[in-house]
Length: 124
Image (tube, rainbow, N blue to C red):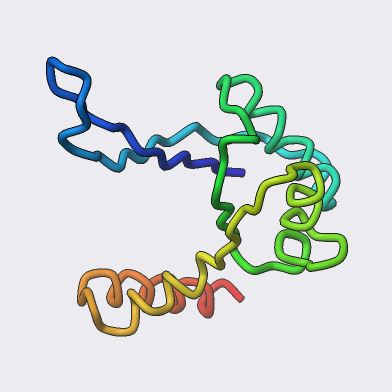
């Protein structure tokens, strides 16, 4: 499992007045997952956040690949995390973003995904 954290840093001047906002994305790392059920994945995600001292209560967005285990509205990871946290967390599907990007907006990305599909077909 791969986890990435995106956060906002508010840049302040010498008088502590906000002057700029920076959006920063940090790769938290890869984690081995033995239990690939929604409960197991939710537990792993929460454990990693705790290890990295990231409070779930301060998280506002959750992205996943759209697989049922992740995105199921009744028993998926997204639902389990939403149940755990009182505040609204926006959930989005990363595969839709990747699909939009690969549909020609960036030719290099489109070529990369075409290669991945060819490799998949070859080995399948």
